[in-house]
Length: 260
Image (cartoon, rainbow, N blue to C red; front, top):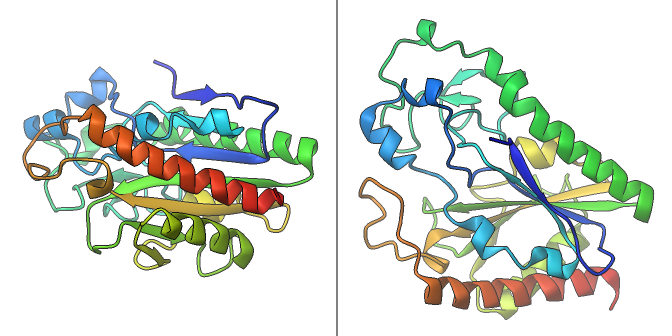
């Protein structure tokens, strides 16, 4: 299984790379057998169906990088020189889900954890960095959009994260904020999702800017049974309606940034 899938931009492209790090569902068998049985069936806190929701991005000229492996193999949005295993919000390898459920049925010493950084974490970031460098070489600058979804702890539809104005200019954040609000989304900035390791590590303004976009599950999924084990059922009509709104918003934001 490849670690990621690249979707090349169409129509000549724009200087934007989109990253989708938390929608993968693949778990190698040697890791899967270490999980709690319920966790194997659930993989809770996955960013469900974002590749399907954002499948229009190449048509807008955006290059897309999608991780294929589950965040429970190695969380690509966590700092590899920080906590290797532990807390869900900090560890590359989470001991529990965001809701406190155990991930593993076996002790740490039997998991061969350290090798996952080189095997799963580093290659994704190397490819993302290469795409951004190529974009700068071609256009002189680049924008990274890091795409996620969430359920709580806020009720807003979208949270934009620019690490409190440090990973991109206020103009970039404002363009996406305004475009999403035009489509009826309730948007908040930086709280509680100010941007994780991906935007913070790859941003180098003004040459490379980065913005995290967190979209609430309820905007595109039926969440009436979201707390029950298993993968949420995808409703094509609901997804299509959400996709149309998101596409319109991102198309407007990209046009605003390009001066069109």
